[in-house]
Length: 241
Image (cartoon, rainbow, N blue to C red; front, side, top):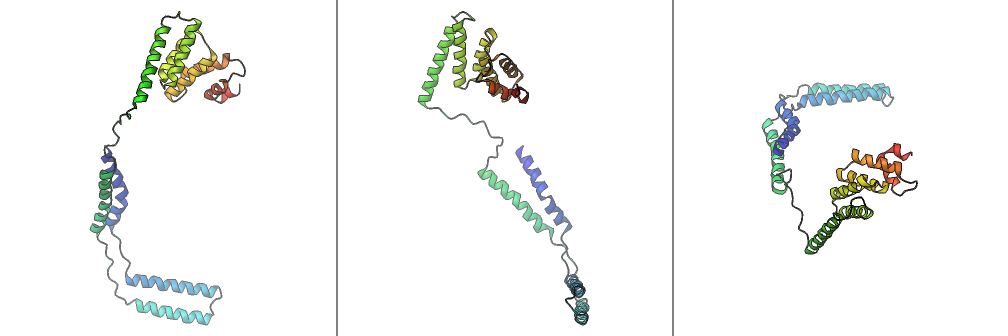
């Protein structure tokens, strides 16, 4: 598909060149050039006279000399204006995009859009650390399944689970853990964290995130450290509160 775009852009770019080659450029004849020069000289003499740089006698003498040259050049054989050959212009114009395509094929990436590049392999140390983290997260989830739902330890465990998942970059798992807590026991600070992680996961403040931000703003004690972030996410109207 990219080659279609390349062809269209090349045709659009070369359209003025093709139009010029089709019409041709008429070269100005020798006689026409001489006549234009002498007319310009006569106009300059008239300006010099009007501005006082020439006396009338000097102006008249110079004018007669220019007229004499004008009459002499009027007899010049003026070859018929000919159009420049279109073929060389077209050939050169086509060579430019052809050379560009050739260079791009050699050193560029013709298979645009690029193929999905697999992530670089991780080191053994990193793999071991990830495996240990996975084991700890699994153990924590197993313990939480044994704790009475809604209890203090249950809330603390799921809050910790969300923080652990967030630190590993698992935003969806962190949001799910914190939502589990908020559905049972609302905390304005955790609600602010939930709204932030939902916004970070989606790239914008979603309706669900805005819901958490609004409730956090309404139920947070004055001076809470997360209020500045909540007001920023909610926009100018919230920053005035």
